[in-house]
Length: 497
Picture (cartoon, rainbow, N blue to C red):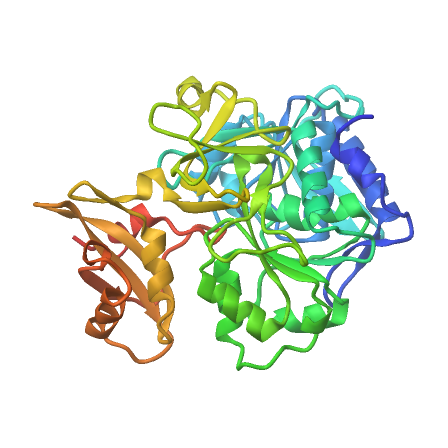
């Protein structure tokens, strides 16, 4: 049996709703398959085929899902953030060597301006019951949209580039197939489940956890045009959502707008999933207390087709402060000499399994440093306990080195978040003439508190060398488009010297 995305899509009952837009249209699995087939054939008629990368600059919508699957069927899907500026589009389009760009009518102007000669421009729109692709570009020789094989490249994405220039990550059909199955199995997804997709569909989190894992189980994906904390619970209620997956920033926004009562619609939630960034135990406690559903923190990254570990569903033991146990892959920890470390000993988290990439594209230097004896080195520091639960300490390149003392910034975040006036916090290292680095933190408040008070609060709970020597009270903390914090850029963002 082929381990491809089209095999996943073939599982759904033709009459079951696959995609629904709040207060909008629905697509059954039968209609979705038909539209993907039509779009794939249209791409093939433009001369696109296996090995051709097709850039998608589209908002969260049914069209985006259709075009992602069609591009992965014909060639390779290359989703890009619609919010990029022209220069950013120019870099990503050239770096992916895109042969075509798909946009919706009247949108994507910056991407259109960034196009190189010879790249096919395609406009995608829903017309009645079907999707229509239009292009004024000269047509190359038409090709057949034959189904892909397991080893064909289905998706290319860039790493977030928090520590270096973004690297191009090619994911094969078999990688994505295994990832969708792993996620569906982890959360026991079924045809009765309805997922709220609030993550952007140009990111591996939204594509795999919310969308393809749901299709793997034959369930329904709710696709609002974007994350809106005001509209979230009405959509959950109206669509009967049974779970959602989000980054901590989104969870915190929902908590900030909650007055303590359980929102209408939350009673149908089987679980709440959190991934792509560290979730503090305090935020987890508040989510469970106010929304009445178990919170399962997971660990994912683009190079592993998203999920690598997760806390289990009840009655399994979910442990705050950990990202759970390995799911469908092997997880280990390596010491500085590239030897696998014993239980409970911290080191670099390494992974191996069917969801993990074979190599970065066109980057021999990154491949040489990222793979050791068949293990992929994640760049994260952590340890695995005797029960197999993985705890992450932080990114190796984000550790604060204060006079030789290695300090995990996440530990400082977790402590300050326990203060009732703190909404968000990010700890980071500042250059120091004597210590090399000193501990600082940027804090967003939700109630009255002074810098002196917060430092005293931290001093009661942290060893002296971990206590921030400087706090910056700010209105917001800079993040990537997917909600990740870039600790190393915080000082620069606030012009902190």
